[in-house]
Length: 175
Image 1 (cartoon, rainbow, N blue to C red):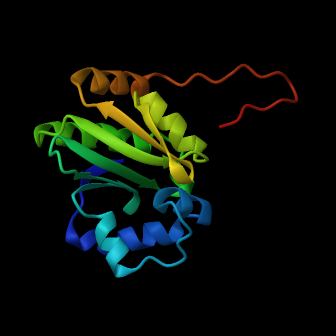
Image 2 (image 1 turned 180 degrees about the vertical axis):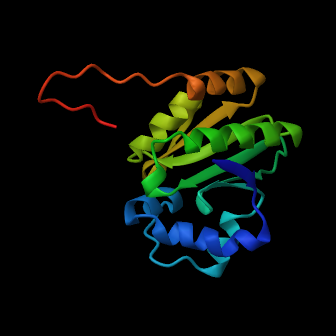
């Protein structure tokens, strides 16, 4: 897995990533049904400070932050290819964004998430985000202070060995 800054030549690959997202993943990322991504929306997805995740020469993840009025606070957003979700890519993207953001003087991230996006709500809780507000329209606002402690916690959780649950004959472990 390669994480690197977004570059202008990635634009078509970002469009392809978003086109590959299931309708549900697009709903969760954009907080509304998106059938086709417009050029304007595409430029907003890669605005601010954006990084990409590349696996086997395919762009499989995108994350960015955009500083708010207070330049020490930024809104963060993620998109990970449906086929790659649950493999820690979102966590790795967050860790890289947090490191970059601290270098840019950002001390807090804000994330707006649909209350029904259980996977992202679980991820943000795992990353240490706390719910700061319940907004109308079924959105939750999360906040996290960017400290070295957050990065160390993440590194340990990503590197922790995964142990398979013991199985008995006739049963299977989910992967």
